[in-house]
Length: 474
Image 1 (spheres, one colour):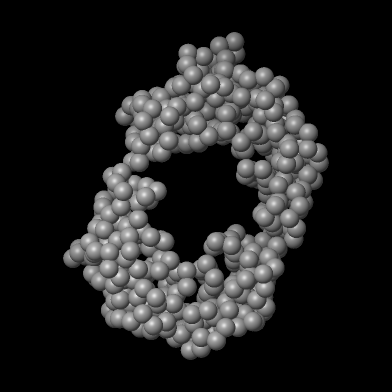
Image 2 (image 1 turned 90 degrees about the vertical axis):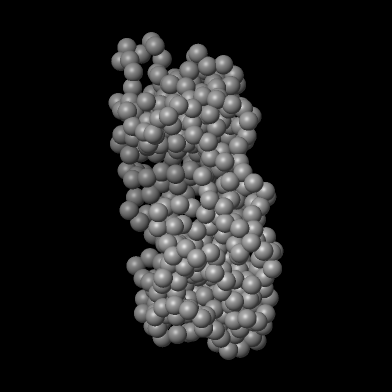
């Protein structure tokens, strides 16, 4: 664990924050499940034992022998009054100040703060595990509410309901499990900060807060009554839009101010439901950038946006008011990666990039934008486009980066932009690279992970401020 540790939530026996991953107290290597709350955490080990640590001011670390703070993992057992004794635990879910877990007998136990009834019994905090009536198979928890599937696969929720996150048609808190307004049985359940969702096959129903259209129901009003959303693809998301493929059909939704949805017109109006794009094609892959989208279908490589900086790769830099998929190549690329305003692809081992080039991210020794794909010298196995820099691994396993280097994200030990691929050392055992906004990480075939660049937020995981050169992540 790493990060804030004021109340021992890292579980390493201290209350000192850490910018590095620190091992939990003890030398156990048999952890199978972890869950983190606001200031505490719990985990299940391979033997089924449940352990918790961190803030216990409201009893969220449910061990009567633990004080207000537990900086080491504490073994959790059901109440001594339970005649069935110790348990093996199958799953655990944490809210802001409460903990719930299911044991091997399908009994559900909760502990901690319960001001809204999130423990499923009353509005009283409990310092030790207290049983919730019924038999249960799965659970999840929001900040101050809990949802679970019973053994009949029916969904129930309880606790805070100010944003209708319980899915029972009201906004009143519930002190005990209350069925959602939707017939089961359900195969899966998940909750967000103020939303819930259950699924059965391709059918899903969602409820709760919807201020940003996150429920995908063509609206932005909260849903106290669950609403069914049939099918729909699992998305690949960018900053403000998303796309997904289901049964070779492509859909996009979200922001469209750059034409990135591909609906034909550039507009500031959000697309609140998945919109089928270019239905005449069979889509295989989709990649989204901040302002543009590219995908591969049975006819080749296509991109769409308003064409700022020549992002369409068609040879023109004229801005478009109507954005539909434009064909770049009849050849299906082996790899495709999108940065903020540039794109790269690999076709038959040859890499090409196009679009914005203010920092040399195209790699053609200039800072001039490229409205058509420009070949990159060398033979490439993998590429990754960051915001304004690019990295790649050659077919011989060597790593190169180029473009914006203000924070050392190129990794050559300098902070000067590089306008062409620049070798990072001479090692030939690089396996995969990912370029982000201002930092880069790459993995070797041995499994070693190395990162470099911006680190003011701890991106590199090595405890330092920032690094111009490669730093191995412990």
